[in-house]
Length: 423
Figure 1 (tube, rainbow, N blue to C red):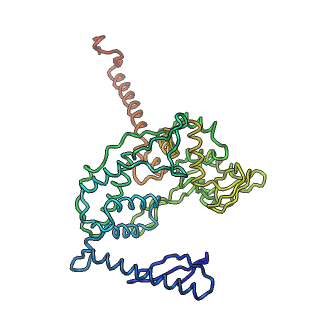
Figure 2 (figure 1 turned 30 degrees about the vertical axis):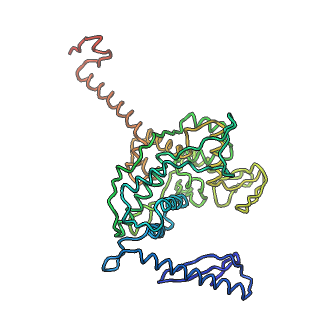
Figure 3 (figure 1 turned 120 degrees about the horizontal axis):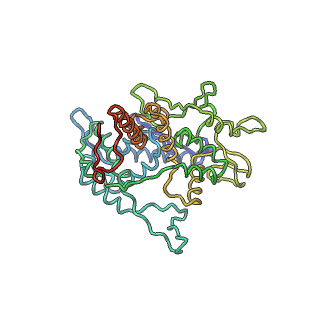
Protein backbone atom coordinates (compact mmCIF):
# COMPACT_ATOMS: atom_id res chain seq x y z
CA UNK A 1 0.00 0.00 0.00
CA UNK A 2 1.35 3.39 -0.98
CA UNK A 3 0.05 6.95 -0.72
CA UNK A 4 0.31 9.86 -3.12
CA UNK A 5 1.17 13.54 -2.66
CA UNK A 6 -2.49 14.49 -2.14
CA UNK A 7 -2.57 12.52 1.08
CA UNK A 8 -4.77 9.57 0.05
CA UNK A 9 -3.88 5.89 -0.02
CA UNK A 10 -3.13 4.34 -3.40
CA UNK A 11 -3.77 0.62 -3.79
CA UNK A 12 -1.20 -1.39 -5.74
CA UNK A 13 -1.18 -5.09 -6.57
CA UNK A 14 0.31 -7.48 -9.12
CA UNK A 15 -1.17 -10.53 -10.87
CA UNK A 16 0.80 -12.71 -13.30
CA UNK A 17 3.46 -10.06 -13.68
CA UNK A 18 0.99 -7.26 -14.54
CA UNK A 19 0.84 -4.30 -12.18
CA UNK A 20 -2.45 -2.64 -11.16
CA UNK A 21 -2.92 0.74 -9.44
CA UNK A 22 -6.07 2.42 -8.13
CA UNK A 23 -6.69 5.45 -5.92
CA UNK A 24 -8.78 5.23 -2.77
CA UNK A 25 -10.67 8.01 -0.98
CA UNK A 26 -9.13 7.05 2.37
CA UNK A 27 -6.88 9.83 3.75
CA UNK A 28 -3.43 9.10 5.14
CA UNK A 29 -3.76 10.21 8.79
CA UNK A 30 -1.25 7.90 10.45
CA UNK A 31 -3.99 5.95 12.22
CA UNK A 32 -3.95 2.16 12.02
CA UNK A 33 -7.69 2.13 11.37
CA UNK A 34 -7.40 3.99 8.05
CA UNK A 35 -4.44 1.88 7.00
CA UNK A 36 -6.39 -1.32 7.72
CA UNK A 37 -9.38 0.02 5.75
CA UNK A 38 -7.11 0.80 2.79
CA UNK A 39 -5.51 -2.66 2.99
CA UNK A 40 -8.93 -4.32 3.07
CA UNK A 41 -10.03 -2.30 0.04
CA UNK A 42 -6.86 -3.25 -1.79
CA UNK A 43 -7.52 -6.96 -1.08
CA UNK A 44 -11.12 -6.57 -2.27
CA UNK A 45 -10.00 -4.97 -5.52
CA UNK A 46 -7.32 -7.60 -6.04
CA UNK A 47 -9.89 -10.39 -5.59
CA UNK A 48 -12.28 -8.66 -8.00
CA UNK A 49 -9.51 -8.33 -10.58
CA UNK A 50 -8.62 -12.01 -10.19
CA UNK A 51 -12.27 -12.97 -10.70
CA UNK A 52 -12.52 -10.77 -13.80
CA UNK A 53 -9.34 -12.24 -15.25
CA UNK A 54 -10.60 -15.80 -14.68
CA UNK A 55 -13.93 -14.95 -16.33
CA UNK A 56 -12.11 -13.38 -19.26
CA UNK A 57 -9.84 -16.43 -19.61
CA UNK A 58 -12.90 -18.68 -19.65
CA UNK A 59 -14.20 -16.75 -22.67
CA UNK A 60 -10.89 -16.77 -24.53
CA UNK A 61 -10.22 -19.16 -27.40
CA UNK A 62 -6.60 -20.27 -27.72
CA UNK A 63 -4.75 -22.40 -30.24
CA UNK A 64 -2.77 -25.50 -29.13
CA UNK A 65 0.29 -23.29 -28.53
CA UNK A 66 -1.65 -21.00 -26.19
CA UNK A 67 -2.01 -18.00 -28.55
CA UNK A 68 -5.29 -16.10 -28.18
CA UNK A 69 -7.53 -16.48 -31.23
CA UNK A 70 -10.74 -14.96 -29.87
CA UNK A 71 -11.83 -12.91 -26.85
CA UNK A 72 -14.62 -10.68 -25.58
CA UNK A 73 -15.09 -7.19 -26.98
CA UNK A 74 -14.55 -5.54 -23.60
CA UNK A 75 -11.20 -7.26 -23.09
CA UNK A 76 -10.09 -6.71 -26.69
CA UNK A 77 -10.82 -2.96 -26.49
CA UNK A 78 -8.86 -2.69 -23.23
CA UNK A 79 -5.94 -4.46 -24.91
CA UNK A 80 -6.25 -2.18 -27.94
CA UNK A 81 -5.94 0.90 -25.72
CA UNK A 82 -2.97 -0.57 -23.83
CA UNK A 83 -1.19 -1.19 -27.14
CA UNK A 84 -1.67 2.47 -28.16
CA UNK A 85 -1.05 4.12 -24.81
CA UNK A 86 0.17 7.70 -25.34
CA UNK A 87 0.03 7.49 -29.14
CA UNK A 88 -3.32 9.17 -29.74
CA UNK A 89 -4.56 12.73 -29.59
CA UNK A 90 -8.23 13.11 -28.61
CA UNK A 91 -8.16 9.95 -26.48
CA UNK A 92 -11.30 10.97 -24.54
CA UNK A 93 -13.35 11.07 -27.75
CA UNK A 94 -12.02 7.67 -28.83
CA UNK A 95 -12.84 6.21 -25.40
CA UNK A 96 -16.39 7.60 -25.63
CA UNK A 97 -16.83 6.06 -29.09
CA UNK A 98 -15.75 2.62 -27.89
CA UNK A 99 -17.97 2.84 -24.80
CA UNK A 100 -20.85 3.46 -27.19
CA UNK A 101 -19.84 0.51 -29.38
CA UNK A 102 -19.59 -1.78 -26.33
CA UNK A 103 -23.04 -0.50 -25.32
CA UNK A 104 -24.40 -1.53 -28.72
CA UNK A 105 -22.99 -5.09 -28.61
CA UNK A 106 -22.41 -5.82 -24.92
CA UNK A 107 -19.07 -6.32 -23.16
CA UNK A 108 -19.10 -10.12 -23.54
CA UNK A 109 -19.67 -10.15 -27.30
CA UNK A 110 -16.95 -12.19 -29.04
CA UNK A 111 -14.93 -10.24 -31.59
CA UNK A 112 -14.94 -13.17 -34.03
CA UNK A 113 -18.73 -12.70 -34.38
CA UNK A 114 -18.38 -9.13 -35.70
CA UNK A 115 -19.31 -9.10 -39.38
CA UNK A 116 -20.32 -6.59 -42.05
CA UNK A 117 -24.04 -6.74 -41.24
CA UNK A 118 -23.38 -6.11 -37.55
CA UNK A 119 -21.28 -3.01 -38.27
CA UNK A 120 -23.98 -1.70 -40.64
CA UNK A 121 -26.53 -2.24 -37.86
CA UNK A 122 -24.37 -0.20 -35.46
CA UNK A 123 -23.99 2.52 -38.10
CA UNK A 124 -27.79 2.68 -38.45
CA UNK A 125 -28.21 2.98 -34.67
CA UNK A 126 -25.67 5.77 -34.51
CA UNK A 127 -27.22 7.82 -37.32
CA UNK A 128 -30.56 7.85 -35.44
CA UNK A 129 -28.89 9.51 -32.43
CA UNK A 130 -28.81 13.24 -31.78
CA UNK A 131 -25.86 15.58 -31.42
CA UNK A 132 -24.83 15.84 -27.77
CA UNK A 133 -25.97 19.05 -26.11
CA UNK A 134 -23.12 21.41 -25.32
CA UNK A 135 -24.97 23.66 -22.84
CA UNK A 136 -23.85 23.69 -19.20
CA UNK A 137 -27.28 22.75 -17.84
CA UNK A 138 -27.85 20.04 -20.45
CA UNK A 139 -30.96 21.77 -21.80
CA UNK A 140 -31.55 22.64 -25.47
CA UNK A 141 -30.41 26.03 -26.70
CA UNK A 142 -33.12 28.67 -27.13
CA UNK A 143 -33.74 30.24 -30.53
CA UNK A 144 -33.52 34.01 -29.99
CA UNK A 145 -35.95 34.72 -32.84
CA UNK A 146 -38.75 32.37 -31.78
CA UNK A 147 -38.00 31.97 -28.07
CA UNK A 148 -38.45 28.20 -28.48
CA UNK A 149 -35.89 25.45 -27.85
CA UNK A 150 -33.84 24.70 -30.93
CA UNK A 151 -34.60 21.25 -32.40
CA UNK A 152 -31.94 18.65 -31.75
CA UNK A 153 -29.92 17.68 -34.80
CA UNK A 154 -29.18 14.13 -35.86
CA UNK A 155 -25.49 13.29 -36.05
CA UNK A 156 -24.04 13.73 -39.53
CA UNK A 157 -23.00 10.91 -41.85
CA UNK A 158 -19.39 12.00 -41.39
CA UNK A 159 -19.71 11.64 -37.61
CA UNK A 160 -21.21 8.17 -38.02
CA UNK A 161 -18.39 7.12 -40.35
CA UNK A 162 -15.77 8.33 -37.88
CA UNK A 163 -17.27 7.28 -34.54
CA UNK A 164 -18.34 3.79 -35.65
CA UNK A 165 -16.90 2.90 -39.06
CA UNK A 166 -13.34 4.19 -38.69
CA UNK A 167 -13.09 3.10 -35.05
CA UNK A 168 -14.10 -0.46 -35.92
CA UNK A 169 -11.90 -0.59 -39.02
CA UNK A 170 -8.72 0.33 -37.15
CA UNK A 171 -9.67 -1.80 -34.14
CA UNK A 172 -10.38 -4.95 -36.16
CA UNK A 173 -7.29 -4.41 -38.32
CA UNK A 174 -5.13 -4.15 -35.19
CA UNK A 175 -6.62 -7.26 -33.60
CA UNK A 176 -6.25 -9.22 -36.86
CA UNK A 177 -2.57 -8.25 -36.96
CA UNK A 178 -2.24 -9.74 -33.47
CA UNK A 179 -3.56 -13.07 -34.73
CA UNK A 180 -7.22 -12.83 -33.69
CA UNK A 181 -9.83 -14.55 -35.84
CA UNK A 182 -11.51 -11.59 -37.50
CA UNK A 183 -14.14 -11.91 -40.21
CA UNK A 184 -13.50 -10.11 -43.53
CA UNK A 185 -15.53 -6.89 -43.66
CA UNK A 186 -16.97 -5.39 -46.87
CA UNK A 187 -16.11 -1.80 -45.95
CA UNK A 188 -17.47 -0.42 -49.23
CA UNK A 189 -20.92 -1.48 -48.00
CA UNK A 190 -20.42 0.08 -44.57
CA UNK A 191 -19.63 3.73 -45.32
CA UNK A 192 -22.42 6.29 -45.40
CA UNK A 193 -22.43 8.88 -48.15
CA UNK A 194 -21.23 12.16 -46.65
CA UNK A 195 -22.64 15.54 -47.60
CA UNK A 196 -19.98 17.67 -49.30
CA UNK A 197 -18.39 20.05 -46.83
CA UNK A 198 -16.51 23.10 -47.99
CA UNK A 199 -14.97 25.61 -45.64
CA UNK A 200 -12.34 28.08 -46.73
CA UNK A 201 -10.28 30.89 -45.24
CA UNK A 202 -10.18 33.56 -47.95
CA UNK A 203 -8.42 36.90 -48.28
CA UNK A 204 -11.73 38.51 -47.35
CA UNK A 205 -11.75 36.51 -44.11
CA UNK A 206 -8.19 37.63 -43.46
CA UNK A 207 -9.09 41.31 -43.95
CA UNK A 208 -12.07 40.92 -41.62
CA UNK A 209 -9.93 39.16 -39.01
CA UNK A 210 -7.26 41.88 -39.08
CA UNK A 211 -9.91 44.59 -38.67
CA UNK A 212 -12.19 43.03 -36.03
CA UNK A 213 -10.31 40.33 -34.06
CA UNK A 214 -9.06 41.03 -30.54
CA UNK A 215 -5.58 42.48 -30.91
CA UNK A 216 -3.78 40.38 -28.27
CA UNK A 217 -4.77 37.13 -30.06
CA UNK A 218 -3.94 38.36 -33.56
CA UNK A 219 -0.15 37.72 -33.57
CA UNK A 220 -0.66 34.01 -32.88
CA UNK A 221 -3.35 33.68 -35.57
CA UNK A 222 -1.29 35.61 -38.12
CA UNK A 223 1.62 33.31 -37.31
CA UNK A 224 -0.62 30.28 -37.97
CA UNK A 225 -1.65 31.74 -41.34
CA UNK A 226 1.91 32.64 -42.33
CA UNK A 227 3.55 29.34 -41.38
CA UNK A 228 0.69 26.82 -41.50
CA UNK A 229 1.33 24.80 -38.30
CA UNK A 230 -1.55 23.03 -36.58
CA UNK A 231 -3.22 24.66 -33.59
CA UNK A 232 -1.64 22.20 -31.11
CA UNK A 233 1.76 23.21 -32.45
CA UNK A 234 1.58 26.97 -32.82
CA UNK A 235 -0.31 27.72 -29.61
CA UNK A 236 2.24 25.77 -27.54
CA UNK A 237 5.27 27.38 -29.22
CA UNK A 238 8.11 27.86 -26.72
CA UNK A 239 11.09 30.19 -26.90
CA UNK A 240 13.51 27.26 -26.81
CA UNK A 241 12.03 25.94 -30.10
CA UNK A 242 13.32 29.00 -31.97
CA UNK A 243 16.83 28.97 -33.43
CA UNK A 244 17.61 32.62 -34.15
CA UNK A 245 20.99 31.83 -35.74
CA UNK A 246 19.55 29.42 -38.31
CA UNK A 247 16.25 31.29 -38.61
CA UNK A 248 14.16 28.15 -37.97
CA UNK A 249 11.41 26.92 -35.64
CA UNK A 250 11.25 23.26 -34.65
CA UNK A 251 7.77 22.13 -33.62
CA UNK A 252 6.90 19.13 -31.53
CA UNK A 253 5.92 16.09 -33.58
CA UNK A 254 2.24 15.18 -33.20
CA UNK A 255 2.10 11.94 -35.19
CA UNK A 256 4.39 8.99 -34.63
CA UNK A 257 5.06 7.88 -38.21
CA UNK A 258 8.72 7.04 -37.81
CA UNK A 259 10.15 3.81 -39.12
CA UNK A 260 10.86 1.10 -36.60
CA UNK A 261 13.81 2.00 -34.42
CA UNK A 262 13.98 5.60 -35.69
CA UNK A 263 12.98 8.92 -34.18
CA UNK A 264 10.06 10.84 -35.77
CA UNK A 265 11.12 13.35 -38.40
CA UNK A 266 11.15 16.85 -36.82
CA UNK A 267 8.87 19.57 -38.19
CA UNK A 268 11.14 22.51 -39.02
CA UNK A 269 9.69 25.79 -40.31
CA UNK A 270 11.82 28.48 -41.92
CA UNK A 271 11.33 31.94 -40.41
CA UNK A 272 10.61 34.90 -42.65
CA UNK A 273 10.84 38.54 -41.62
CA UNK A 274 7.09 38.78 -41.05
CA UNK A 275 7.11 35.63 -38.87
CA UNK A 276 10.07 37.01 -36.92
CA UNK A 277 8.22 40.30 -36.32
CA UNK A 278 5.13 38.45 -35.05
CA UNK A 279 7.28 36.57 -32.55
CA UNK A 280 9.11 39.72 -31.47
CA UNK A 281 5.73 41.33 -30.72
CA UNK A 282 5.65 39.04 -27.66
CA UNK A 283 8.64 40.82 -26.09
CA UNK A 284 7.91 43.64 -23.66
CA UNK A 285 9.36 46.84 -25.22
CA UNK A 286 9.82 48.32 -21.76
CA UNK A 287 11.94 45.54 -20.25
CA UNK A 288 13.18 43.83 -23.41
CA UNK A 289 12.10 40.47 -21.95
CA UNK A 290 9.39 38.07 -23.18
CA UNK A 291 5.92 38.51 -21.70
CA UNK A 292 6.08 34.83 -20.73
CA UNK A 293 9.35 33.15 -19.78
CA UNK A 294 8.55 29.79 -21.45
CA UNK A 295 5.76 30.17 -24.03
CA UNK A 296 5.73 32.67 -26.89
CA UNK A 297 2.06 33.59 -27.34
CA UNK A 298 0.30 35.57 -24.62
CA UNK A 299 -2.87 37.57 -24.14
CA UNK A 300 -4.18 40.36 -21.90
CA UNK A 301 -6.70 39.36 -19.24
CA UNK A 302 -9.93 41.28 -19.84
CA UNK A 303 -11.15 40.89 -16.27
CA UNK A 304 -9.98 39.87 -12.81
CA UNK A 305 -11.18 36.42 -11.75
CA UNK A 306 -10.11 33.11 -10.20
CA UNK A 307 -10.38 29.90 -12.22
CA UNK A 308 -11.44 27.25 -9.71
CA UNK A 309 -10.82 24.46 -12.22
CA UNK A 310 -7.14 25.28 -12.76
CA UNK A 311 -6.47 27.23 -9.58
CA UNK A 312 -5.09 30.12 -11.65
CA UNK A 313 -5.82 33.70 -10.57
CA UNK A 314 -6.08 36.30 -13.33
CA UNK A 315 -5.69 40.07 -12.98
CA UNK A 316 -7.19 42.43 -15.54
CA UNK A 317 -4.58 44.00 -17.83
CA UNK A 318 -1.84 41.47 -17.09
CA UNK A 319 -0.48 39.02 -19.66
CA UNK A 320 -0.83 35.25 -19.45
CA UNK A 321 0.02 32.31 -21.65
CA UNK A 322 -2.40 31.74 -24.55
CA UNK A 323 -3.88 28.24 -24.38
CA UNK A 324 -5.47 25.83 -26.86
CA UNK A 325 -8.88 26.27 -25.25
CA UNK A 326 -8.50 30.03 -24.89
CA UNK A 327 -7.75 30.69 -28.54
CA UNK A 328 -10.57 28.32 -29.53
CA UNK A 329 -13.06 30.23 -27.38
CA UNK A 330 -11.89 33.51 -28.89
CA UNK A 331 -12.31 32.13 -32.40
CA UNK A 332 -15.85 30.88 -31.67
CA UNK A 333 -16.88 34.27 -30.27
CA UNK A 334 -15.42 36.11 -33.26
CA UNK A 335 -17.22 33.84 -35.73
CA UNK A 336 -20.51 34.38 -33.92
CA UNK A 337 -20.02 38.17 -33.80
CA UNK A 338 -19.19 38.26 -37.53
CA UNK A 339 -21.94 35.77 -38.42
CA UNK A 340 -19.48 33.37 -40.06
CA UNK A 341 -20.36 29.69 -40.45
CA UNK A 342 -18.23 28.49 -43.38
CA UNK A 343 -14.75 28.91 -41.93
CA UNK A 344 -12.68 27.05 -39.32
CA UNK A 345 -9.42 27.93 -37.61
CA UNK A 346 -7.84 24.89 -39.28
CA UNK A 347 -8.73 26.43 -42.66
CA UNK A 348 -5.89 28.92 -42.10
CA UNK A 349 -3.50 25.98 -42.36
CA UNK A 350 -5.11 24.98 -45.67
CA UNK A 351 -4.89 28.59 -46.87
CA UNK A 352 -1.18 28.67 -45.97
CA UNK A 353 -0.58 25.51 -48.00
CA UNK A 354 -2.59 26.69 -50.99
CA UNK A 355 -0.89 30.09 -51.09
CA UNK A 356 2.52 28.46 -50.82
CA UNK A 357 1.65 26.05 -53.63
CA UNK A 358 0.52 28.97 -55.77
CA UNK A 359 3.81 30.78 -55.25
CA UNK A 360 6.03 27.70 -55.54
CA UNK A 361 5.95 25.03 -58.24
CA UNK A 362 7.89 22.48 -56.16
CA UNK A 363 5.55 20.08 -54.30
CA UNK A 364 8.44 18.88 -52.14
CA UNK A 365 8.71 22.36 -50.60
CA UNK A 366 4.96 22.36 -49.89
CA UNK A 367 5.23 18.90 -48.32
CA UNK A 368 8.10 19.80 -45.99
CA UNK A 369 6.75 23.24 -45.10
CA UNK A 370 3.36 21.77 -44.12
CA UNK A 371 4.92 18.71 -42.43
CA UNK A 372 2.95 16.25 -44.56
CA UNK A 373 3.76 12.57 -44.46
CA UNK A 374 3.52 12.15 -48.23
CA UNK A 375 3.24 14.06 -51.50
CA UNK A 376 -0.28 12.72 -51.91
CA UNK A 377 -1.32 14.84 -48.91
CA UNK A 378 0.34 17.93 -50.38
CA UNK A 379 -1.37 17.46 -53.74
CA UNK A 380 -4.70 18.36 -52.15
CA UNK A 381 -3.42 21.93 -51.83
CA UNK A 382 -2.28 22.09 -55.43
CA UNK A 383 -5.50 21.14 -57.28
CA UNK A 384 -6.66 24.66 -58.20
CA UNK A 385 -3.09 25.81 -58.71
CA UNK A 386 -2.42 22.90 -61.06
CA UNK A 387 -5.46 23.74 -63.20
CA UNK A 388 -4.30 27.34 -63.64
CA UNK A 389 -0.77 26.22 -64.51
CA UNK A 390 -2.15 23.75 -67.06
CA UNK A 391 -4.14 26.61 -68.60
CA UNK A 392 -1.03 28.80 -68.84
CA UNK A 393 0.95 25.93 -70.35
CA UNK A 394 -1.77 25.29 -72.93
CA UNK A 395 -1.85 28.98 -73.87
CA UNK A 396 1.92 28.93 -74.29
CA UNK A 397 1.67 25.85 -76.47
CA UNK A 398 -1.04 27.45 -78.62
CA UNK A 399 1.11 30.55 -79.06
CA UNK A 400 4.07 28.35 -80.04
CA UNK A 401 1.95 26.40 -82.54
CA UNK A 402 0.62 29.59 -84.08
CA UNK A 403 4.15 31.01 -84.36
CA UNK A 404 5.44 27.92 -86.10
CA UNK A 405 2.48 27.71 -88.48
CA UNK A 406 2.36 31.51 -88.93
CA UNK A 407 -1.37 31.63 -88.20
CA UNK A 408 -3.54 32.99 -85.43
CA UNK A 409 -5.62 30.79 -83.18
CA UNK A 410 -9.41 30.96 -83.87
CA UNK A 411 -11.23 33.42 -81.65
CA UNK A 412 -14.81 32.83 -82.82
CA UNK A 413 -17.17 29.87 -82.74
CA UNK A 414 -16.71 28.07 -86.07
CA UNK A 415 -20.46 27.25 -86.25
CA UNK A 416 -21.26 30.96 -86.50
CA UNK A 417 -18.19 31.95 -88.52
CA UNK A 418 -17.02 29.06 -90.67
CA UNK A 419 -13.89 30.88 -91.84
CA UNK A 420 -11.02 28.43 -92.01
CA UNK A 421 -7.37 29.04 -91.19
CA UNK A 422 -5.18 29.71 -94.17
CA UNK A 423 -1.50 28.91 -94.30
